[in-house]
Image (tube, rainbow, N blue to C red; front, side):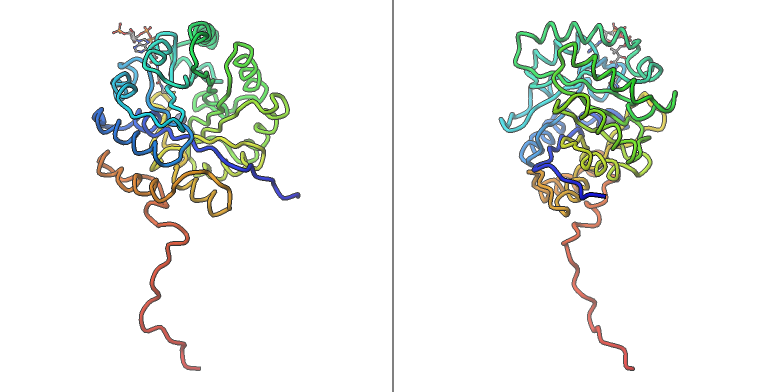
Length: 316
Ligand code: COA
Ligand code: ZN
């Protein structure tokens, strides 16, 4: 097997204030959300998914989307993204000056009905309308395919179905695509196959991988994607996250653990890991519970410990 070539730089896209907070048991006050996003803006992440412009009945934790989007400080080096499910959400996100809209639907019809209350056709019709209203704005449009690696209701999703959906997105005029493993069902070989197939069919169309660590395969999947030619990854500080409309959903790949792994491998991310770890270690106080992230607890591989005192070789 030949040695995989890694990209010159990996783009880290932080989703904690969207995917992370949407499923938290408690509402995080708007000012705390803004402070967290402002701090994340100075860590070197390429994108921040700020919030969702969705029904406040569906996702009460993000009911303050407008105030958050308007309240944050904007670092010109960061792309600020909002998730939108429909035309109404897109109009609100554009109005709030988001740089990018993340249009989401599922490969699986059942999950799309549970999550968005729409058939695939209804979702795509909505996307078409969004392309229309966004035409005069500088905002970029990304299309996410949820349950791309498996659905908790339907199981495996055929690769061809996922690629055909990506093709529909691009035909509509969306600029980039995210393949999302909503409930951590992907395995590394499957990921490598789908990323390679995406690259073969769509060339260098920007592709993001969005993994959840539900079954402990998140970092392995990220590595498999990287080796297959992916360079953009969503991840969530501390490993918070999950879709409220997918049974058993748990957190995203942990941003600081992913950055740590990449740095240890010599793959540049542009992210200041020390700052990220500080923020991750502050999360439990903010949200009121422990976080799944491991490097925040263990420290970096290079954070060495003092040798035990009084060490000496046993007498022979
Ligand atoms: N932003 C804010 N409110 C919205 C909205 C939007 N983008 N779209 C619809 N609404 C409001 C409606 O005005 C209505 O409010 P009302 O009950 O006070 O009149 C309510 O939400 C329901 O609207 P309706 O058009 O009947 O939609 P629905 O009940 O069929 O739900 C969605 C469709 C897409 C709005 C809803 O399922 C949703 O927001 N899903 C997002 C789920 C999500 O974020 N999942 C996790 C991320 S993948
Ligand atoms: Zn997710």
